Length: 269
Picture 1 (cartoon, one colour):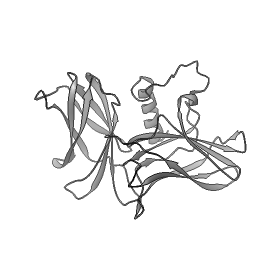
Picture 2 (cartoon, rainbow, N blue to C red):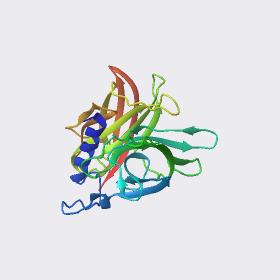
Picture 3 (cartoon, one colour):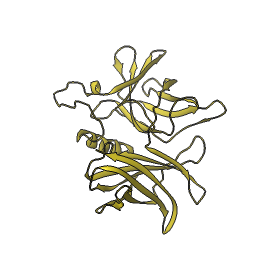
Picture 4 (cartoon, rainbow, N blue to C red):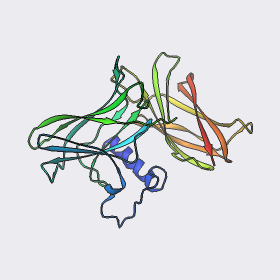
């Protein structure tokens, strides 16, 4: 099992506990769990059809992607080589975004090819998103490319900044999707912009957090700084001891050196 597959399994486990896939009926009696996914787009070329699913409509932040590839009307490919390139067309220039490529085999739960990408900005006046999906059928050797238009809604789950080492980073909040009073599982991802088309995962820096409630003038105890688990993922715990407005500060560090501080604002009911 590769690292991406293990992280997708982790996210699905979290989802089943009600933290990620909100509003989905994952009853074990459901004969087809794909019914609980959001169909993003379907496109065909030659004798192939590709359908793209997400757990919910795409927004700025971390978005799981699932792909079904059919040869002809009903022949679902059991394996395929799929490469996804997110592309934001801004007229004067284009750029990509962090992406986790689908594995070559269908996953055990949805029976789809699973990957993910981080949308770093919304669709709108500044530009529009596409997913360029390149597929190779290993049985026939047929390769093709499909562009799929994607509308991305605004959110506050992504921070893009230039740190003191002059590197451009992308910090993305994944969990908790709906923060609650008490201890919450905290998952973020960290990537570096190597170029407009390359965003490698960063696993060799450290992150420290500090929750703070400005209106009450206090923080919280029993927090765990998120530690790298590979492929750009960092996992820890964040504790909120009352409802209200919270700001979680994140300090990016290289050893003892502070590289940058940013924050995410939350409202707990």
